[in-house]
Image 1: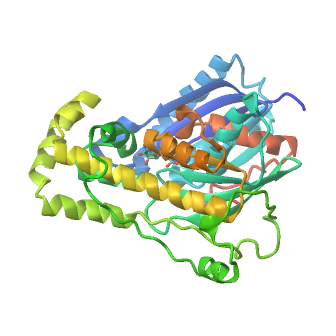
Image 2 (image 1 turned 120 degrees about the horizontal axis):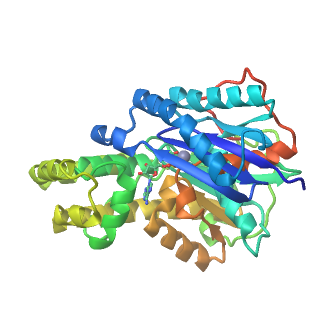
Image 3 (image 1 turned 90 degrees about the horizontal axis):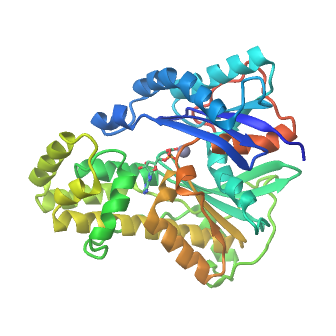
Length: 403
Ligand code: KG4
Ligand code: ZN
């Protein structure tokens, strides 16, 4: 296998990332400039501000990534960039810069789907491990601020193919974390804050019901299949994502998280928590970089219990639906990636529950769970080997799907 140094560039949302990865497995540098401070006052990502921040950061971030890797513009073998999904204006900054570099340096240009990047964040680190053999089919849960998607993944001769077997019908899981944190006056982004506060509350205190989506394919399938999912053990049934009709056939496992956000809001209203929330919001706004102790000091027991109960419900739903899908499709390995995969309770629950069924579950390290460019450079490597390069007129694709 040839040695290749790929410069990856990621600007799909609110992190400007550049990284150099050798042959899809060794990270030589991975620089991320976060825009959290810019978006914090708005409680969410403001697209126009994100584009401007990317413009400001892109040149220094790429330079730093090359310098830390001991590489130069001339020495890298290819340039990889996120094509989508993401914010159109944000994607365009990375794409325009990557195109300019590729054109000026006469280097191949590789377009990468951001979701495939999240999946390759797992593969990147898995390739470095001693027990590197991977058993297929692989089921990947990509769970972030924009996505809660389940994919069956296969590879043949470096060609990775994906089949979507579930997605959120409304809010993504990360979005629910962010909105609930905002609702409780805890700041932005909500996931990491809720993750750290939850162990301080009682996860059984508030009962939340999360919508269970009935999919037509799922019901049809169950009627014709006497081996009901719950009793099934993990096996090694093969699937062919390229088979005609593969997209339409088979059971689906969809998610829905807008209801739990509304339930939290209703709880806040009926329990009259609003005055305390407003006081907390103002107090936290006055602190430059609030610590866990600051947040704890500003949260009463009832709020901590609410946070813990919300997180427990989210985690249980994500784990339960993913494992049901894993059983139904007889998968042999589970990947969990994307920003929410950094969540501690999600990791330990997946490990415990999947472990009980003898199903290996792989996560990226926490730093590679959230958006970064190393995962983009890693996902580009199989495409580099296949010489899957894009022409200079390729476009950003804000709603890009993965297949
Ligand atoms: O993958 P990512 O960096 O960006 C997207 O592609 O969306 O994911 C960001 C999302 C945010 O919603 C953030 O709140 C959530 O991931 N997140 C977490 C944690 N760290 C980040 N959610 C729960 N627990 C965490 N520790
Ligand atoms: Zn992401």
